[in-house]
Length: 361
Image 1 (spheres, rainbow, N blue to C red):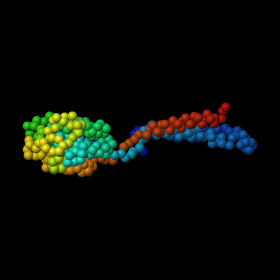
Image 2: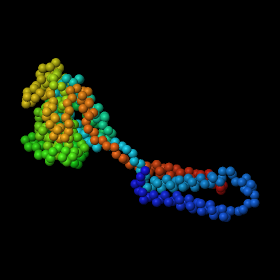
Image 3: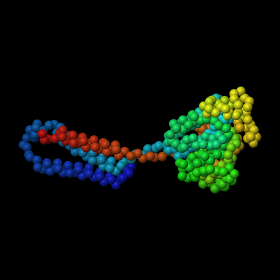
Image 4: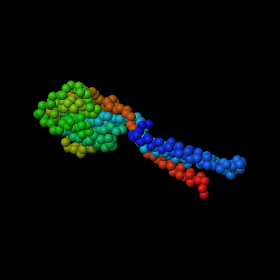
């Protein structure tokens, strides 16, 4: 046990001083006592327990003074508590290719399930945010410790056209800047503007505890290129963990009305049963296959790791293996109220005992 105000322990001297005064008064009474010739007669007059009852109020008062003296110094107990130092930004691809059914029931539903499990599995107090990206990247949930808000947003994910991986990285950095003063905001970046030179190799100045976890099933086809966004992360010492999701085999795209956001008319890739898949306009890369080489380069250059998952179980294992910067620290909990309350009860008991066993009518 420690004390926030140890100097206040001087108040404890009140207890021994009171005890000394009480013993001194008893000694004076003995000197002034009247002598009786018959001790047996005196014992018959005095009740059997009166000799120790008269000391109970004083004993209770002394205990009260001791407890209140300790309370005045603000006692504290130390206990070990897990502390999550990491703020995690989840950047989730919601492009229309997430409707692919090569993962049962489709990629988006499997990603939602794994992401929910990841959120629920975090240590209490972990701050998390959500970025969703398709043709553009948007902040869906600002970094928060409220898991219910995050889970509600994950349940309501809807798809759209395009895949802006680079923009998602920059938007994630902006989200982290709101909760970590060591991460500078990026703001609007012109696609034609050359990326800034890295301040140094990734990790040369250490990393901030905050991370970005980016999940995608395709290749970048909108906005800034992912590798052009990497220097912004390196300069801010933020690690970007990437997850390439889905198989390499094309599959029919089937999304529910809720996952399409009611935009069935703009569902370019066709419906169940195959046919209608659009592979052009992506630089020869299939929009239904994750660009693993680029994702691996993003993670490697930022000092993180890249993963690949072809089904729901693999995706859940990947999420479970992501780093968690959780430390155990000693947290001081003040218990002044307990000492104060018990001390007050002892004082009341002393008053009650004094009244109850007072020698005067």
